[in-house]
View 1: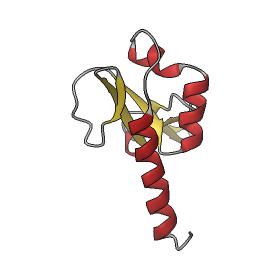
View 2 (view 1 turned 180 degrees about the vertical axis):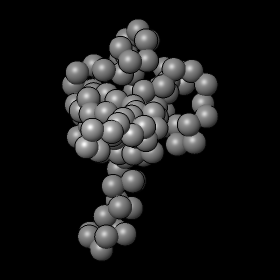
View 3 (view 1 turned 135 degrees about the vertical axis):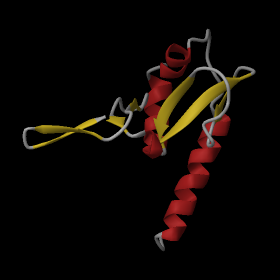
View 4 (view 1 turned 45 degrees about the vertical axis):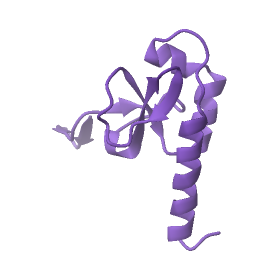
Length: 104
C-alpha cells in the first residue's frame, strides 16, 4: 500500500481488499478466509493452504459479501459456501471487542 505525504509516496506494505465493502487496507486489519471441504473457515494464522479472500472483522462486511455472492467468485469455487464458521468467529470477535471497551 502506498501512502502519500505531500509529494513523496511512502510504501507502507501490501494492501488487501475486503470482499464485503471493497475497501483496500493492510492485511493486519482483515481476516483471511479459505474454503475447506465446501465450508468457509477463518484462517486466523494465515497459514491454511489454498486461495484466500480477505474480510473486515465486521458482520456488515460478511453480510455484504454474502449478498453480492463474492465468496465463490473470490475463491474460484462453484456453488454457495457455508459461512457459519466465519459468522461465529466474527460474532465472538465483536463480543470480545465490546466487552474490552466496557460495552455489553
